[in-house]
Length: 342
View 1 (spheres, rainbow, N blue to C red):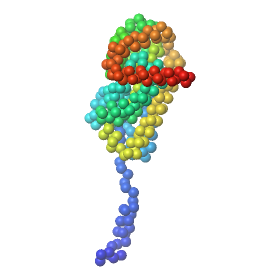
View 2 (cartoon, rainbow, N blue to C red; view 1 turned 30 degrees about the horizontal axis):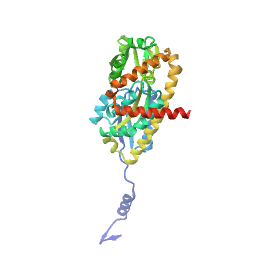
View 3 (cartoon, rainbow, N blue to C red; view 1 turned 30 degrees about the vertical axis):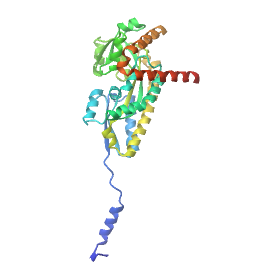
C-alpha cells in the first residue's frame, strides 16, 4: 500500500487499527482504608466483611475496602486523627461520628427514647442535618445504624435508685455523653479505655458496666458480670464515614454503588441488632450465667423522672436546646401516630 509516496507495511496498518479499537486499560483499583474497634470474628465484623465484598463485586474490582478490626488502628479519636493525616480513609465508628456530627448526640440523651424504633425514626428525620455536619468537617456520611439500648451489667443486683447510686459503673473514656449525664443523676462512674475495662472490674475499681448488649458480648463484659438490669438509659449508634478527598476520587458510578452497599449494610445491621438484643436479653445471657434483675415500675419511673429533670440542666451541653425541642416534638407526633395505628 502506498501513502504519500511511501510504502507502509500491512503489519503496521493492522497494529494501528488494533490500537484504535482496543479497550482502554483497566484503572488500578482504589483501596479505601477503613478502621473499626469492632473485634474480629464478631457478628459486626462479619457484616463489615460482607459489605467490603459487596463493594468490590459491585464495582467490578474498581474499589477495594481494607478493614482494620479490633482497634488495631487505635481508638475512635486516634482513627479520626489518622484519617485527617491521610493514613486512613474512613471508619466504622461511634464516638467519632458524634464528634463530626454533634446532632447525633441526641440519641444518647438519657430517657429520651422508649425503644429502638423511636431512635431509628429520629435518625431518619435528622439525616439531612447529619450529612451537612459531616460535609462541613470534610467527610462523607454514608450511613448509620442503631447498635442498641444501653443497659447495666453489674456485680450485685440493682433494684432501685439508691442501689444504683452505690454501684461504681464503668464507662468508655471517650463517651462524653455518659460522662456529662451520669454525675448529673448522682451515678458513680469510672472512665477508662476499652482495653482496661476488664481489669477495672477484676480489680473491683468498678462494679459494673453501662453498655449495649452486643458490645457486652463482643468485649466479654457479660461473662464477668453476674446481673443484668434492662433499664435502657439511651441508644447508641454507629456510623460509616469516609474523608471527602477519598470519596471524591472514586468514579461516579462507584460512588453510587458504595452508597447503595452502605444502605444494605445499614439494614442488615439494624436487623442484626434487633435479633441480637432479643436473643441476648430474652435468654442467651441467662444461659451464660447472667441473672436478670426485674426492673420495677417504681424504679423505672423514678429513674426516667430524674432523667427528664436532668435534661433541663445538662441536655444543652450535649445538643442545642432547639434540637432537643425539635426531637421531642417529632417523638410526640410519632407516638400519637403509632398509638392510633395499633
